[in-house]
Length: 320
Image 1 (tube, rainbow, N blue to C red):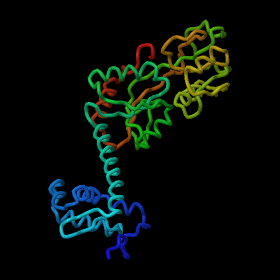
Image 2 (cartoon, one colour):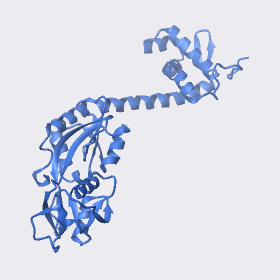
Image 3 (cartoon, rainbow, N blue to C red):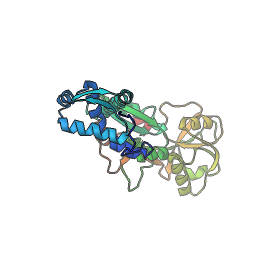
Image 4 (tube, helix red, strand yellow):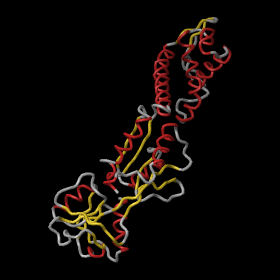
């Protein structure tokens, strides 16, 4: 009498799952083909694999599982109850693998692949939409996964492989990353329109040493630049508020909570005056970064080439 569970299986089902997966994976497609036909010869014809290879693969699969998957009568095969149960799971698993393979192939398609692209909050209203619009003139089917965040968070996601490219500031300098400077953006001292300095057009940053500042939180590139510029001007800023978004800070300046060093707005905001800082030179560099040694898919390579071609003209006139 034949038993479905053999007394001494080669591989126990309690063994390490990774080991089981490595042993089973190459044999599942062969098993599914034989199971569909319940005939090794027809399965061999469909798969283009020798009958002996299929027979050995199925036998080893049964041995690894410790389960009889086929009842054999001469050359005829029929699935056992365990075999039918196993086939349902195998077909689902193979279907998932095929769908994953199709998704991966689609992502690297030169004409319609995917690019995971990160950018700063301050570049989301004008710069990035303009870049994507210009790129898609020649690459209309390329898909984008967009992430808007502050610099350090994007660099972490870049290192984790979640992003292909990111626009950030300051331009990172790290051995595991490649970064290229693309442009620079002037920063202005933003003051309320009834402030004592509101009648000025230009100012030395040292003249604001006694002011309360509203800034971005630590970890944001613009916060680091603000701290560095104030230090260069000879003072440490007295921080009244730390936020996460530049336009929120501009609104708080209008409300009289303090002053701020900010890039130009996409649209002028009432209630504030924006002063040119003459000393120290108040700019932030904008660059593109990617992971060193990581091969580019064709769509990523195309978008990277496009970004590098915008060196010196990345930003619109209003954002310079």
